[in-house]
Length: 115
Ligand code: DGP
Image 1 (cartoon, protein in one colour):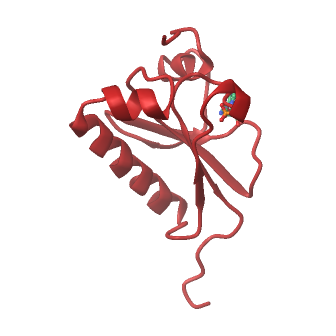
Image 2 (tube, rainbow, N blue to C red):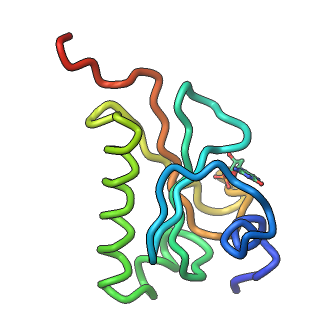
């Protein structure tokens, strides 16, 4: 059951400030307040889904496509290209502390063009 009082719902409503990386009609991406990598960004759908299964089972296909396009746009904006990890903690036992589906994007190195 989705709780509209969760911190990411408040961020989406503009009640809590965030450092936005990317934003469109379906997606918001912003820096994690407690980074665990040099680059640590969270990508969230604007729709109300508690976790990855709620999202993949209940979000319309167009919304899911828009989410993954948002992830790609975020990664490109960050200049990470293919040097990043994604994590979707699912369930409190696995460390999910905010019950609004979110994908962690983490990287310790930006892509170097002439490596
Ligand atoms: P998880 O543990 O997977 O549910 O990740 C939740 C993340 O959200 C955690 O890394 C810290 C981050 N976080 C919690 N509150 C805020 C906030 O108010 N602003 C931002 N930017 N990040 C937050």
